[in-house]
Image (cartoon, rainbow, N blue to C red):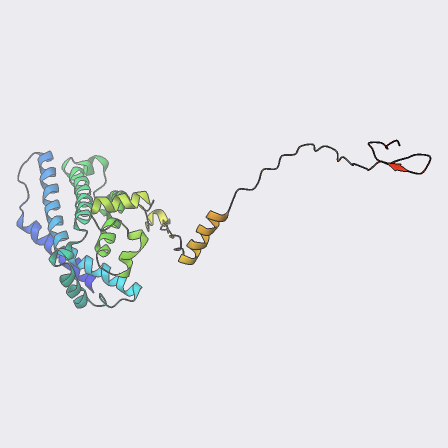
Length: 265
């Protein structure tokens, strides 16, 4: 597979570079430590540069399988798509965070090993140095450098032109390493997918609101125009109703006169 081929290429190039760079012959332990760290970092840099295109192809093929896309369904098709869309630089998408992650991790491991051996800590502590002593350092580095690993994976597929590059979670991740890290920090996804100590960080899914239809927008605008605030009702005491009755005055002769009185003849 492409991933195993990349691993073989990485190991082969690292061993070739280590064979080309001689070890330091100085007798000063600090200088020996620094020279060996630089030697290992140079070999790791060459290995990453040689194997990174295989990482890009592998990640895009995995995304194509998940998304049922045909552009990156095979290694040959992936190479053709990358060359036609982005050129040679497309094979090195996300190379900077990958380099920083791998070189810093190798430097920490070699530094611990060289300090342990050059300063005779194996005799003083009575324990020979082996891979078990480097395991805590590797775990710590893996935890600290996980955002760089995540950034590398995202940048290898964010410019692929597939459907995954159009997702809201991928917004702002294709314009550089710093912008990608800033986007992950703002959305709280710096540890997305990490599985340290058997605890996995689930990704934060941001669902955008559904777009409003024109009919809904026109109805909303009409409601906004027609709607008025409810009237304010003040409770006041109303006066008692006045009833006006017609009063008539009747004299002894049976003649009626109004309120103003009767005329005398």
